[in-house]
Image 1 (cartoon, helix red, strand yellow):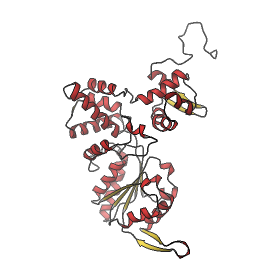
Image 2 (cartoon, rainbow, N blue to C red):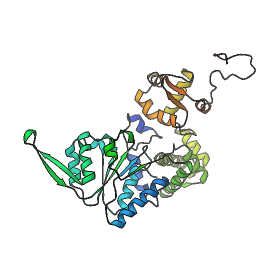
Image 3 (tube, rainbow, N blue to C red):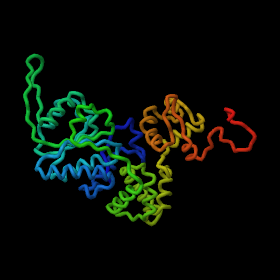
Image 4 (cartoon, rainbow, N blue to C red):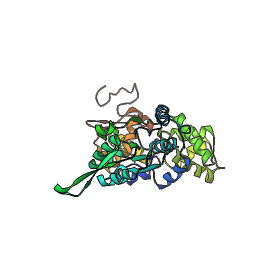
Length: 359
């Protein structure tokens, strides 16, 4: 129940996946009701919560605004939620925007000039902000001042504009794309980690209570195991399993009900969906486990190259089912085992035959 707003995806197919980490309109509406309101309610990310709590307490004790905060990590782990908690803990209003929405320095100047003292400005996908706006942000963060350019050419004049103290909370899924001068201006940086199954079970139990859904311990564990370490996905799966339980059963979510429901939605025991399995099956059955080029693999699956590379592969690599090598994509022994297939050359011992390489 800690989530983020939608992030950029290579195409719409990512947003349509039940196990996709981006948020559509339905997700955002539900998340607004389920989000924790303070650090005490926030589940998981123990180190980040402890460190952030110290930063905010110290700022309140000094009667000052909190340091600028940079949150990085995969979509759906709680970056937006933490930004709202920061504002709540500091008893300050929050303004939310995103990097892609700020394409000109004037766009940023308009936002900054209208901030109130102590206000929290949440800038999602900060790495996608335009370079002119980024350079203006350096001065705003450090000196609480921006220079507004009036006029053009030789007659242009820079008018300094003083800003009230504010807290910038930047969020990014790709921290490596942030230039060092911008990254260095954040007083506190934190990386959001994927959740452990036990933490996701707590997320699911809490969300089930807020949604008035009855779920037992085994049912929550079954959903958590298929949620890819991401609270947003856990909550989405919970809602779909709730629908199944209400229509096909008595409304109570047990392990069997959760398993049957997620089988309908083609989410297997490790959280792989149709696209993930299609990539693995093509790699194993058509290309003998690889190596095979990305473009060839994408054609075999019937998807765009970017969809395979940016939507399916990250989770498969993280799960140890696929490896990216200089020669192409290669399946791991775990991939063969997960699909119940036998790797080439793994014929039973004692058949008197050698494999292809004479081993």
